[in-house]
Amino acid sequence: MSTTPPTPDYELVDTIVLTEPAQVRALGDPLRNTILGLLHERAATVTELAAAVKRPKGTVAHHVNVLVEAGLLRVVRTRRVRAIDERFYGRTARMFYVGSGQSAGSDPLPLDFNDFEVAARESAGAYQAHQLWAFIRHARLSEQEAAEFWLRIKDLVQEFDRVPRSGDTTYGFAVGIYPITDYPTLPAETD
Image (cartoon, rainbow, N blue to C red; front, side, top):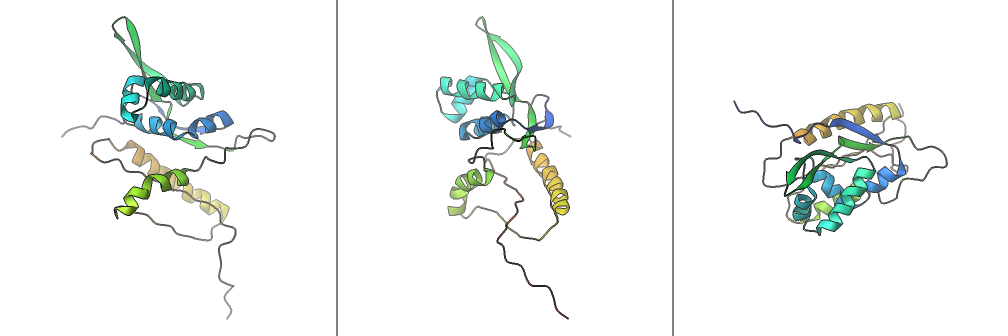
């Protein structure tokens, strides 16, 4: 029986609630999200990340520093290479989510912080190739029921995050619950 190494190859907490606008802004850049996604697999150096995203090392280093300053990345180990300590970066948590820690008068969340917009952009090729698996459903729920359902969804997302990276194809997984104010509803039943 073979044992699969944990994903990623360093210790991290399961979740961190993002309560600072700077943390949320750090996630607002597609390249930084890609870097965070790559680090689900294993810790990596700036050089490795730059090669993976095909961007200059200086550009990637800048984005890594933004993520470190926001508390989303940290150095998880180092190794000595020709008298220089090479840093391996890893995520600080398996999952980040925006919390309700914003107080009155603080900066609002950026309008471009929308995972569905990112998913729509990423999934266009899969849709055109008839390889997009998706559902959208609507249900009238109480706030409590929606919150309970969201907890179950978070468990599924955490399971997806823990899947060992072993295949040749990267898959996206987008989920969400959102209130709709103008969705039609049936009138109350009459006897």
